[in-house]
Image (cartoon, rainbow, N blue to C red):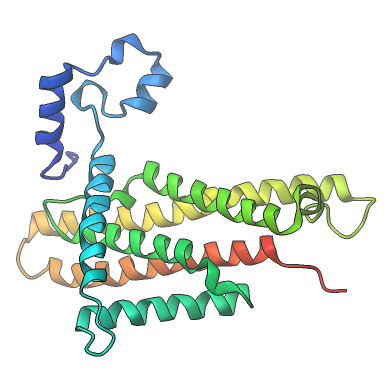
Length: 253
């Protein structure tokens, strides 16, 4: 099946080729070329990166405008929706992380909103969901991984934080430490693959149905896509909050 690209993929990379020439794939090793230019000589920037930049541009315009129109006395429907969303995220962080959990709302909320809107890109035939690319989901998972470990180190100190990977018994501490470290790093794989496979699978399935029967049949799939977009954003945010809670929790004596 031919790979589908967004409406911006061709124009953006065409402009870059006119300005910079062909991507210097032949000057790099195979590994470097695959990392920096996954589409080979076809493109300077992969579609997922273009869609991510588009999403960031939308946020950079939309949220300042929303903030300027904030009205405490007569909130608009859009303002009410975001207030409800923030309230829900605050409640989730407090329930999962505990007292003081509201201070993690900015990062957890950023994950939820970014992933939710990115997932919705898949409902438009002229766009591509950035989260349908493994490179994007791995990047998000790595950010979450670095964040919750950093918060754990800040809360306990480096040595005390590493100590909680050793388990309760000194005799089996080395074995326990290895297992816990592997399990912690596996969270990157779990977060990234879960999000990628759900969004990529849903988007691909909808695209196949739309190409076969463009009217009527894809609509139920699009409705399912709305549910999947919200669910996967919630799951990623929830798991990130769970990991923060585990990293910052204090042992009770």
